[in-house]
Length: 169
Ligand code: ZN
Image (tube, rainbow, N blue to C red):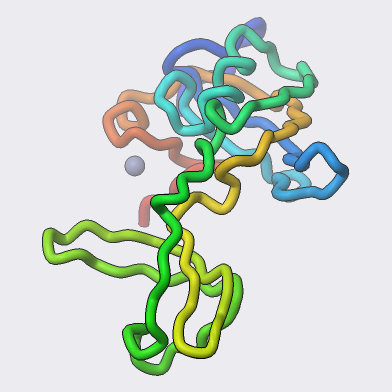
């Protein structure tokens, strides 16, 4: 594990741990880090939404800030091409269609597409393959917890090991 160096600022290939609350701007909480369990990511690798990653640059441990991220810099705009109908008899066997249900399908070339059911009708469901937060302006309240250099193994694997990250068993 790399040392935590005092005075370290957020920069490329640093492992950053941060606490966050994500709201929709009208007061509804969409997501948040669990108390005492900050999220960890490697900066500069596109592991968090681009708009938030840009705001993290140069921040120091203990820094708290708000970031308003437009859809284009967040989870993307909502693409109507990603909305489609599925006849009920084409749903996987045993599926009880319900709004909010998440499904995945594999195309003949092996590409996995994930989608959510957004409406259930008499003979079909409406499915949406957009990210659930596509089209949303994201309001983050962030507090940087700590910053350290990524290890060679972390850079190699492209993810954080240990606290807040992946655990290899
Ligand atoms: Zn790994």
